[in-house]
Image 1 (cartoon, rainbow, N blue to C red):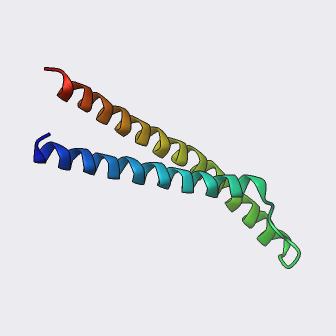
Image 2 (image 1 turned 90 degrees about the horizontal axis):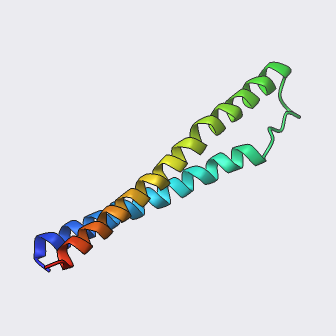
Length: 90
């Protein structure tokens, strides 16, 4: 294995891992938004409505974004696999 190719593989693995763990973190934030409710005990009706709307919008943003990051990491790992197979073929 040549040195530049090994460096490219290491950079790809780092990118894939960062995308994967970033996606999992984002998905967990979205799941937290979906599974918890807003505590409106100390809030006025308008503040409670605003907090609920923000929680719903947070859910709409984080779940698809996290899923997209995880899928991008899978694409990076599959691309690296294809790159390794091409290198081993004479």
